[in-house]
Image (cartoon, rainbow, N blue to C red; front, side, top):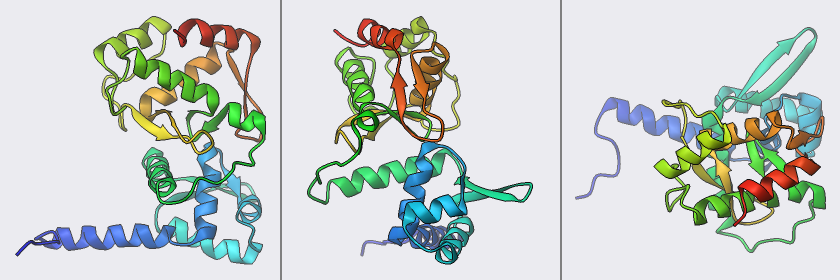
Length: 231
């Protein structure tokens, strides 16, 4: 007979922990809050209640549940309290859930503004049309493994040539294919995606729009993207 549970007490504890994480996410309002926090910023409870379209009193209960589930953390600064995702692992979980969910519904017509679809942040990496084109180029040129799970040796070499710093021992996924919600295709996530975003910003090729996920590709950035990420 096939065993479906782990055979130790630790296994039982793990199963309970998995169920607790799933329960913490199992509400549309809490999912909206997690998706809002995917921009990498810290949000106030008032901002998150608006994002989830619930009353502040209701938002308070949802936030407490997410904190208890260790999916978000609460930061106190003076009289203000801010919430943000608990870490890269939570962001990666939300990304994976988005990708899994898109495959189970009919793709809706996107109502996102054109600028948001063009370029934006997805937690700590670049998303949108520009990011998808960069990912497609990297895959076609052999920078990435077929499933996007890692940079190839050639890809690491090209990152170094660009001046993108990569950790030899990353504390997260070195690289991953992140499903882009507006393009329905992949952009670059993981440590490599985060490093690329930092590089693009440091070179002045992109500029963040304060208070929003939207990113503007500068004139020099458009030239650089064509130079480095087009065939």
